[in-house]
Length: 550
View 1 (cartoon, rainbow, N blue to C red):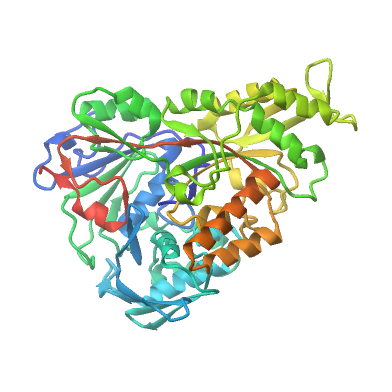
View 2: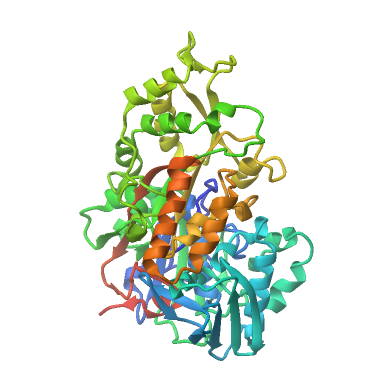
């Protein structure tokens, strides 16, 4: 559904709440009833942990965690939405495709922004054009949703024409579920220059936020509770709840306690730790589904990086992968809710993953044998030394919330004579791409993705075009890019599957630019008594159908 990198640090949670104490209780004194006692459609309290859901901003171009993805579904219109992997209409009531499969024409429903200004195809065309122009820099954070798009133009106020570089199968349009239209009149004044003013813009500084989705924001707290109230000008069915409160918890146990107490209706993507903590508790249900996620250890693949050239050797990378105990990672980091990393594609995309691509086994003996054969001998401290005399000691960029994962990787690699020191970076992207987007400093970096139903989305992360933004390996291969572009236009499903398989082999076997670690199951915790919480859906209809009772 989503393609996102979890790469921010935890921040402290604020306890304040200015609107509807029913949304967030258990963080101090409360003057209202808990969410479970709300009348009518109810006030839905959605809990996320700071590591996954802290809201840095309501600007979709500036923040990419779960909280931001929840917010953009609620407040910004999308052309299409997803029911599982199936494409459904949203703002676009229908669409047509040209005979050559390159041009998709979307017919938009009439609507207005919450400030009363008309919501038109010109807003969508402007948003898309900006994102395409900035696909290679920080402002292009969500440009993957427009993969393969050549241009987006408004034929009139209610007709949007999306032209692709090459013919594309309709399944590629699932990426557009991640494309959220911004109000041009609000964002355009910040769009000049290199995009830095755009990413710095904070729409939450002036509330209520100008919205075109089913809700608008009336209260914003990055580390507390953000309040979403129905947008009266929404083009679609009115929300059935009175409000949604997106509540950020400092840690997993805080969210688990609120769920057990009935203060939170939905632990959104709560994860394995929360699920394990509430398992068996009355009034809540743990809902898991095939993983849409992948955790990766990326290795700097830029040939211009001067130090640690041995890290670019495929056999060294193979030895590192064999040294990793993926089962231990799953038990410790995921409480058993997961499976060993097999591909950059998540298990829910299994039809796109070739059968010969299986998880590397944990084989320390073989890993040591490979490194011995390459001539990397252990020093007195147990750390191997290259033939040139350099210790095999490297840094690994991580964020604070995955320290347990980092510790296991550190231990595993030490067993084969490779020293790794975690580097908790305040600005993950800047640390990986330094200096100035040239990828000359970092050695290894952990990344985590929740994926879209089309395989091209996460594969594009490793394209040359993604340098400086979401490419966390410094990988750039023109052959890879050419095939990546070609597969979008392959209308023959079998032919496209083979192309996608080849791309995975290039990335994971020929170069081993990324080492798949694990696929965490998609785990939500839902309070009983709520109707319409469909964890497989992504888009506005999910949020308008939720209500209390049967």
